[in-house]
Length: 291
Image 1 (cartoon, rainbow, N blue to C red):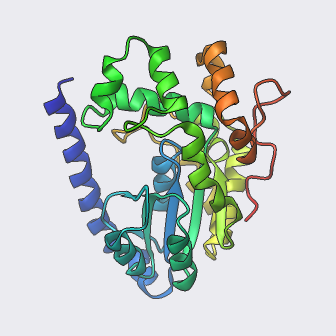
Image 2: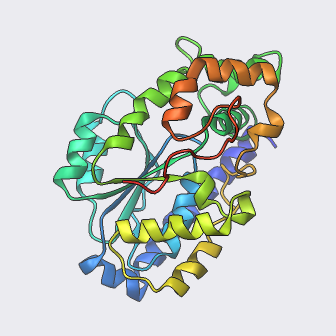
């Protein structure tokens, strides 16, 4: 696909998302949400499940999307992002890839905004991010650099170790997000739980994740309705979607690359609740539903 067509598809998608947000705002339950719905901030490390979380929120009553694109501020909370988050209204949710800037954390606390933090096994993040900037988003600022690298392994190494002036290392990326795990009022959800059977997870874990989110957002939804909502979460229609599978790294990452990744960011992998490859299991080792 040419760059022109790739960008056209992305533009069409975001226009459709804006129209969907407008239509959703007119639904009877969304109108009710303007009075009693929560203000919701959904944050994630890039390539950790933004579209998965959005798909869930689209099916929850009382909620409507805020209508602007995913917020991103790497070095600090910008005035524009501050205004947008502070102006969230009842029943609105915003999506973001935002490190744990202290002003942002204070802003969420001060405005009583309910927050979700979606995390994913960093080994799958590396795999997904590398392929995304290489093949899926030709307008990405590091696309040309990655395409010029001689091999897939070279691109994976760039994502893992970072390149000065081009891309941060995996350990720096994760370090900037890890404080969210300890932030009061933020619910951490693992991608591997929320994705469900269609994405390589389990139905039980998916149901528990959905129930935890519903409880965190202080909603009253009958268990049978929650079950139906969970079954509709996994959807590969967004332009940033590749496979959306849990634990794909186990059959894809070469052993040498895996060893380098765990040497670079093994402590952060474990802090997020995942066992290292040398350990017995690669599933979350800490409760993914603890606030």
